[in-house]
Image (cartoon, rainbow, N blue to C red; front, top):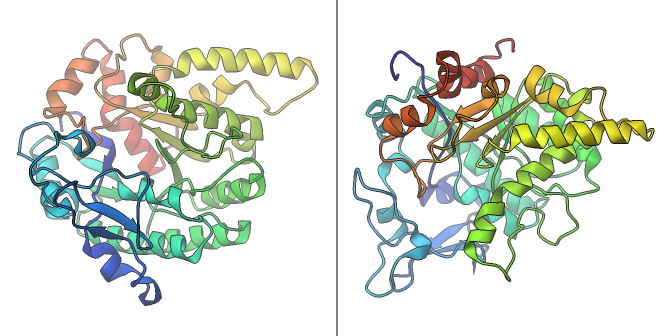
Amino acid sequence: MWNEYDVVDADSHVMEPLWLWKDYLDPEFRERGLTVQRDALDGDKLMIDSRPSRLVRRLGGVRPIPGEEIQDWNHLPPGGEYASYRDSCMSESWDAASRLAWMDGRGIDRTWLFPSLGLIWPREVDPQSAYAKAHHRAYNRWVLDMTSGSNERLVPVAQLSLGSAEEIASGLQSIGSAGFRHVALPWGLRPGHGEELLRFCREAERMELTIHIHKVAIPHFLPLEDACGLSSPDMGRFFNHVNETLPGQLFLAGLLDSGIPDECPELRWVFHECNAGWVPAWLDRADESYATIRGQGANPLKREPSHYVLERRAFFFSTGTGENLSNTPEEFRGNILMATDFPHPGTPTDPYGEWMTAIQDLPETSRADILGRTARRIMGGESR
């Protein structure tokens, strides 16, 4: 708690431990399950069905130093021996007691937990395969066990594989029965999967689940080979880093164009690592487009897009300390959630100091909403 504000970290992660797949995978998949192969000369490798990942460059490399910035394993200097994946991860990455102690030391009351490797490896397998589904089930079992004694301070987000509309519905029912109240968008959605998406949304709404959409796993619905990656090999890291928020913007447009906010009016969506400052200006354009298309006889929605964001409060956006929120309209601040992204590179070493600086010019009501009140409303199902 900071200055009497309840604090909810809307985007933090686990680093999946080495024993997860060994202990939690269905027996028939354990021989082919995800593993980490030791490589002291170049950094450990994530092995997917016995082949190295093409998207994960390196796992581990350097032991973390408490209180210092978390290093990016992919950009360590060459030479010497790289620390193992396990030694490079803090115990807070996968141990509940350590994570709660870390939170207590920083005044954070609750946090949503997302996978790390689980955001990436599904992009390298068939999302409808038994292999993918087994690994998601294993992760869900493990993370429920990991968070079970936290008095609901650690809030896990379930993973789900894409399948037929019926399989998605049954998968959601299993997730809800296990105790999850939050689920990530199923991996593998592309144009033409409208029936699966609508069935997923209807079932999630019926079960009062919140849907989370996280960077690197957001379908952009463009006719490109990779449904989530928009990076350009012809451009530099700055170009690609700036444009990492684009899939979130494109997917939001796709949701509105599908009419799902009208089909599922009680459903709540949370976008992560897409930033938030672009949303008000984007809504101006979206409302203009809505008026133009409606004038041409098309009517994808009953109301203008800003209604679903600002009045209905169906869409929320987590952001870090690097974004200037002082220029955001007051009516939009109830859609913004704070996030640390712990334990990934970029995690603030002093969340309290950095966040209080980021919101110091905002009214007290806005500060309370951003720090945790809005997240608690989402988690508690309170009226908007």
